[in-house]
Length: 226
Image (tube, rainbow, N blue to C red; front, top):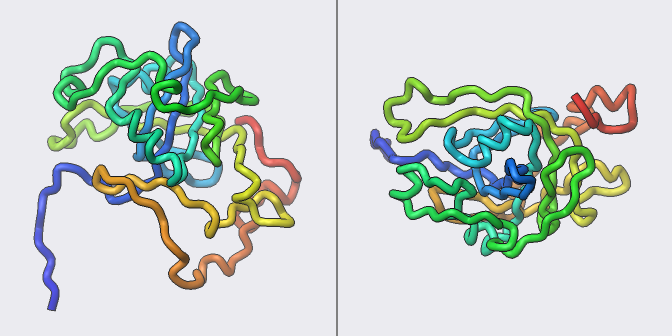
């Protein structure tokens, strides 16, 4: 019989997709930051961010970003961003972790900026999924958590426009992702992973996907603004 052990891990990176968040700096240049504390419901997304980061600063000031989802083939590019920060004056915790300032993260990662449709920050051309978004709310997070080593915040976003590489789409609908083709880059306990083959058919998937999109019944187009 297997028993459980009570532990106190330093981190809780149980396995979430890597997101490259692009924002605009105050001087108009682009910032690009990798993160893996994000989740989605409907056309809304919640991010968990370091309150002192350049990304958080840019989101507060401009209210806009692009969530570029990294696929497994971009692992090397993402890793090149891992210990870079757009903040010139490094906070103490980032100095301790070995970060260094980098003004041009797109070049550092070997990635290509691509103009967005409705927000100022650029998309990442190499990412198969790109979500233009606007800030709904920014609030402190884990303020009462004695184990939280740095100040954090939660950022609620509304998705405005979603761009997906055609080879990920199911036909003939053209608005659905084929999960067997999408291989997201996953961060699990600071190591890079991806997804494997489908394990078995899902009962949840027998429900028509359109049941989650009642807004489509009245309009053929996806929502583009809040």
